[in-house]
View (spheres, rainbow, N blue to C red):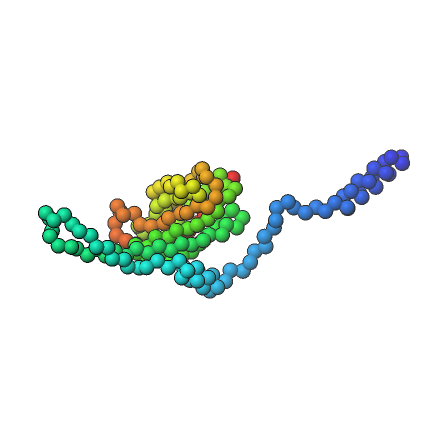
Length: 182
């Protein structure tokens, strides 16, 4: 009888004295302030400004044309850092015609990366052009939805741009979704 009381008291004592905290940290939701987010994006983009217009002078074959021709092109690229929260990220941004967007994210522990871009226009000429891993290996082009097996863990660069084979340059609002899988 004494052993039964002792074991019950011992069991109660161990249950009360143990701290039952989860091993995984708990993140509480925060309210999203779109204006502050927009201002922070503008500050980040202003740090990474690329000149909009470069001039390239080339000499053409003298048998075809005997003068120098000036070729100008404009290419803009914006880099957007993505913060993954609970294995997911969702970015709403605007893409200008002929603009490339580079989304940078860390896939440190994941084995698979699910990416999806959703343009506001259903016939938009935009796709995931390339995925570059931390070792510099690249893969692509892809469509607007891709499930990518991660070979090298670390920082990945996702390039989003137009398909040069499908038509005119496109600009508009796009939503970028990233989901890590283990």
